Amino acid sequence: MQLVFLGAPGVGKGTQADKVAAQYGSHKISTGDLLREAVRNQTTLGLQAKGYMDQGKLVPDSVVIGLVRAKLADPDYAKGFILDGFPRTVPQAEELGTVLNERGLRLDRVINFKVSREDIVKRLSGRRSCPKCQATYHVDFAPSKKGSLCDRCGEALIQRSDDQREAVETRLRIYEEQTAPLISFYEKKNMLSHLDGAGAVEAVYQNLTKVLAAYKTA
Ligand code: AMP
Image (cartoon, rainbow, N blue to C red; front, side, top):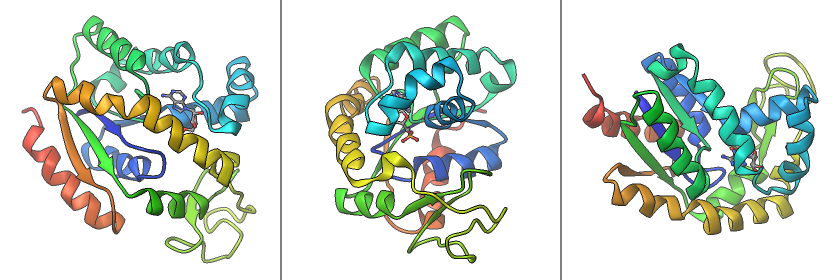
């Protein structure tokens, strides 16, 4: 399937995209993950992006569009993908439309995940991740069995700099200003389904698969 997962930071898009990718044999394309990888590898792009990301600001459109273009150029990715965290601005959405047209692709559906602001702040501020194997945890909802160490590889867990309070506030403000307009952008194209992202991962996933079943092309 060819999908876009839309929603504020912390609504659980990434977790659900991993599950859908595993079940449908498609690829998750997370611009956040691609950017963090570039930062870790200290590439030119990573060095450019780091300052924006640490503050919770959006990386310039041209940079993220280039990342997505490169992924969709891979025929294997083009067969099935879930865009997680892209597009985040109207120009990104317009450019995505152009790239898909060029490649003869189209989106099956855009899913808008909805979670209350209070829950989002709880989810983001309690999130911890492993800097070595990238596993993610939550101090209350999905703690590591080894406390502050990664269950998988034993590395000390860290809090992402953009999950700290001030950056979270910035990310939520930017979401409202720049990303929320995409809801009406895709609604007008009759491509949008809303999904309640509150509650347990499995329960959200069950509802998501029901929505996807209605739009899966043969
Ligand atoms: P995420 O993991 O999706 O929350 O992304 C982490 C950070 O990467 C964001 O706060 C932005 O700084 C940057 N980022 C990810 N995706 C995009 C995008 N589509 N446009 C601009 N910046 C992005």
